[in-house]
Image (cartoon, rainbow over all chains, first blue to last red; front, side):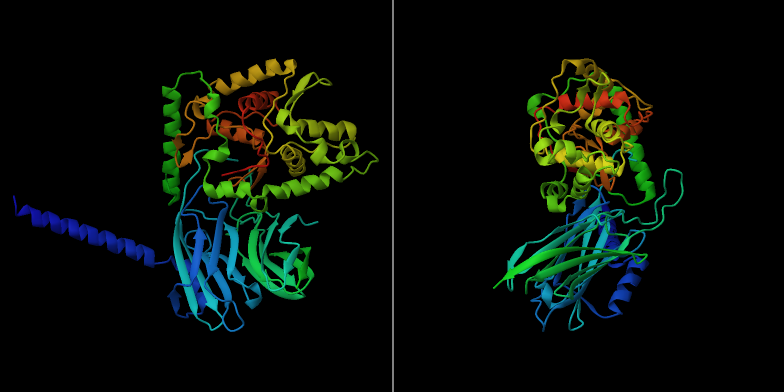
Length: 151
Length: 107
Length: 270
């Protein structure tokens, strides 16, 4: 009987590893469309994680209109400011959401809008600083479905 | 006539960072929907929003179909001098609508 | 809750919803006990904090676009020498305060009940000698939203006119009678199963205190009649046409049923 335990443990470990790998690969791999959209924004530049923060409810009642903010940690001075912030989605029919063009006159790097999310998915925000560096944030949003039909 | 709502302070102190919000009446039709007769509804979206203050573009947004109907935008600017703040929305066909607000800036 | 992942999942979820509805239909008794007054909850209280925030702050409430259009219609004359709404009624914030909370009312000229949108249509065709805006058209929703806004935060106070009693009773019966292929009454969801979940959504009590309102699902402002018609479609019943007396009767019953709640129009709902 005891000989079966290591087997079971091995099975569990390998299942768990598989699940973790599947999860991480799911998190890392953007859909090809979103990847292409991000590349066309970044021109292939190195994207670092940090400085940018997406502000969105993790669970939304209706994907037709979802409040979404994005802020960047930046002094917004002539020497150090955010030039552009782009928002991308993974699973709408098209990956682009918006690009915001900022400058030192903004005073702060904070923009709010309302977006559409066709389904539960990840969002990515990328900020381009005036020195050309690129910073990103990524968040998952769960979109619930309505119970009743609508016209 | 455009149907738009602008929300921003009427007065500000010089150097103050103010928040400007704007809502524009527009379906942001994606082009992916069909009407009751099954005919595709043509894409009709606002593609650009700009804000000009003291004659200078102080903020711009490029919108895609993933922006919700009746597009809402909130952003900030530094109050520098009294004058007009002009908000402009432009659709994919190049048609545009503008609304103007007055900002009074004190020292 | 059920996250949408694919059309297959969406289909499966909709089947789940239908089977849940069928279970409600099978288990529940045919008549409802109603909602005790202490348990009255506006749809506002049961929606998510994000949607509540949109309603609480007019600068984030897209229905205010309709209010703006309504205020323009209010002061625009029909161009035939007849007055604008404001020509007879003056400033809406004064003259229309407290009007929406008592509608529908009895209309002596027709001997029938009339709801707020119907009254506006009547004014347009009789007083303004103009073509009335059709039900659910943008200008009529805009005017209704503008008038309803003037009663915001006032308590629902239905017309006490005795002549409304038969229509109110008819509305109550419509509300509690099973209809459609799913064989469900309004009351089975909104009285008996209020607060439970149907798919990912909470079943609200189904009150009328926010209409006309901005629904995220509609991406626009719609009337209480639109909402009721959608419910009828949901239980696979033939919806009444806009303006039908059955819908007016339901509106009268729903006004009575919402006594104790505040007017929130134009509200925001998911």
